[in-house]
Length: 199
Image: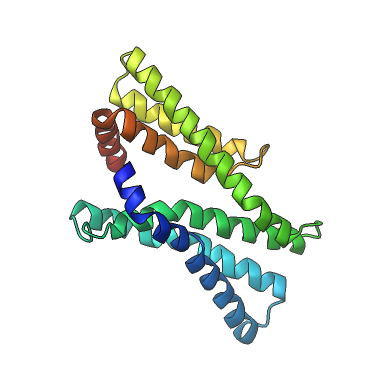
């Protein structure tokens, strides 16, 4: 994904990043209330864990459509791929809040939602910084494409662990790494993307 695509899908991507997941989560909560006889907190857990795994169904299909150039004029696959990370951040945050309440923790759903923008901004900033440093390292030293892929995957795992100690949306941290590499090392980024697709 490059700057041109982000400019083209910006406002649409912003709306798609949270509205569908919230609608899905709350819809499942309502249905669970009538059909499953759960408590409100359990309904929230069910609704938002299902909403969190929905991209796992959609994303592989979008990748296949992108490979075949379907929807390229309106960048439909790119839009859905771009919002999948934010969508997951929103739904996982709400699921975690409901889970904490069910477990007897003093968790505020409102505070969790207020923290979301901070976590997303920190994740994007950290990811962009690492992408910039990675591009400098690649320009200064010759690193094979396979080693670059392994290095990026290692960074992604470290990001996941970082979420346990810092309020950072680690899913959002991985996306800017690819964006910065695409901007600064377009040829290498294409080769890395090709290797990633084969994993």
